[in-house]
Length: 342
View 1 (cartoon, rainbow, N blue to C red):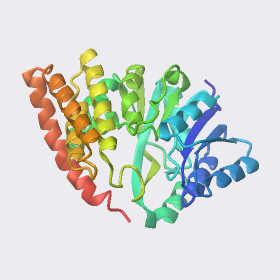
View 2 (view 1 turned 60 degrees about the vertical axis):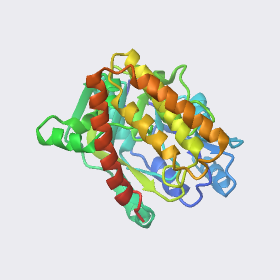
View 3 (view 1 turned 120 degrees about the horizontal axis):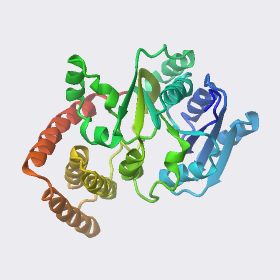
């Protein structure tokens, strides 16, 4: 592919008037100019639709899709259906891209022949919005290293505890390069990875649900060791506000699906073990836990989890449990510091 390949950037938009301009401005200011920006208005009730239309009127690279509210999966799918680029990127409507995000991700992907490229990200609070936007507009320095690894499904299931990643890097194993979560941002995908694959609509854990199949389609992933994405930590986001039992049930279901997928591919599903157990536990503390329908769903989830755990060997089960306990401790630290950013 030529260096000027067209990149489709999909942005689901819902009631983001406070942050949307910072997000879109950072996309349109990309050093790689050959982009199409697909803003999917998912039935927003604030001024977001008008903001989107204003950008489309001012820049021919911007396309707006207006649709009734159907959730982020429906918005992402609409963007995928409309995309015409050689490569696909996703951006959340309140986050900020470094000016060189697409440039560096595209270079690392094309120069290595990888199926997906990824970079590091930075979390920030609302009070840092202007400062982060100014820094992002300057652009990141050249990465020191591009790391290419195979079998991303194995990496997804095993490299997820921060403590072990730090230890791995300390001993020269470059472990951090093999880490990535389920979020689709701060990545660049070859378009064909999404052929016949779409997010399940009507559920919260749409990104987790497609993780297994998506990563198993990849042969190589390229990582660059530079921050290219700024992730806003706001109280109104789905990952920060108090969630109901359905939210946790959806995540348990996604964990179950990936657990099975990993086992079918001969991989110990350590991350999916953590997701299933932790999210099922969280469901017992949801504000609507007493609802009969929610209690029934939890009981069914518990039975499915027990059935799946019985398929693990004793060594696999011990490994999954130890990583689960370590990740729980890390989550406590994360919740105390990152989620409380102002």
